[in-house]
Length: 471
Image (cartoon, rainbow, N blue to C red; front, side, top):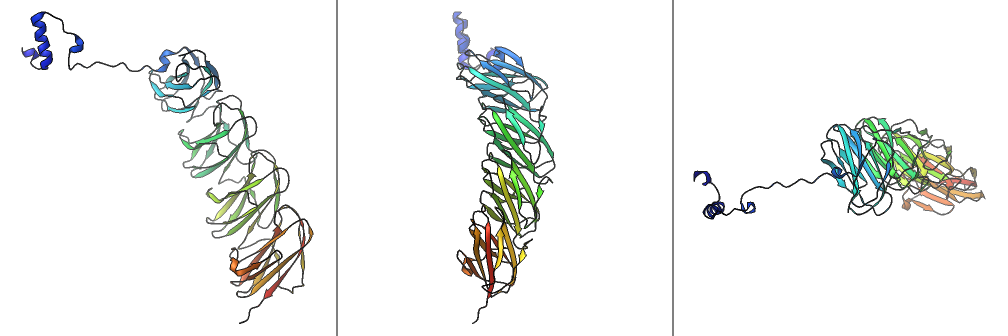
């Protein structure tokens, strides 16, 4: 039979048997036939109820009250948009699983139990969010929200510098939104602290395309490079989702004029007056300069920490709670000094002082004299640093003697070489009242006298004598 010559032998034999006996052949025994498998249905197909929500709106409070319940929410979006779906369980034993089904009814994002999902919209029109318990039997409360990442809705303009941006997460799952327009290659420095409630604030920075550049990160500070120019979005939310409370968000760009100009050799008294506040200062440095930055708290519960940034916004001197640090300049231009509280929540007054060690400013002239030739001085306020300069000859010695004459302070003093570097230990003999150094080169040397703890005041006498060496 020409019509069956291509059939497999087994099927041909079965047909022959059927013709001979008149028995029916079961379809399950037919070899070589393909059977279609049904595609899994999207969760939205089983919606218990449907509620419309707006993009960028306050999270909607809802609940799964029965086993296998599927709650659905609809919103409108455009093709090629990127949206952030956020579903946070707030009570019961619910393990919230969520997905977004597109206009054609198929899932375009999820299902997943993650609090946050970022989804690419494929078609214009109504999108459906489906929320259910991951195991099907759990129940409990939750919140649901959706935000556009390319064109976020309901955002505030990000304030730069002080005062900080103050906000509050009042509904579990809420994410506050800020926008800032900046140029190419700028760095955005953010610092966020909780000011009330149980919130652990998390910061995320996104570009104009809705892609995450930095974070989400719950650390106190971020330094984020904004590679392309445009409008950037900053999202603040609780790191775990359900907690609420207030926060303070400080933001600064590495190329702005919102920082206070600090003069070398001139101490400035300032204060941190609010939780989350960060004070910003600028000094100008040339490549190779040595900059001494000293910051000392003088009142309140403040524990100061200081960070020094290069002109491009990257770190030159790491964040430190030490009273002082010395930074070597690598990039010419405006160097930024950031001062804040270590925990981010304490307040108080402080003194800040900066000095160019290789070219000191506002220092008194000192000259060699006899051992009994005393010059008086005063540490007039907490954190004060008194500086003196003298000309020395290479190969000779200099002997500085400092004697405390009043107050509760503990004298601390040092001698610095013309290039701004400290002396090698082998070149100096130091004790509580004297420092004797062999001068390696001829030039201008720097003397700095201060309180060891940078919190006390008092008076002193000093003498400076030259030592000559003979063969």
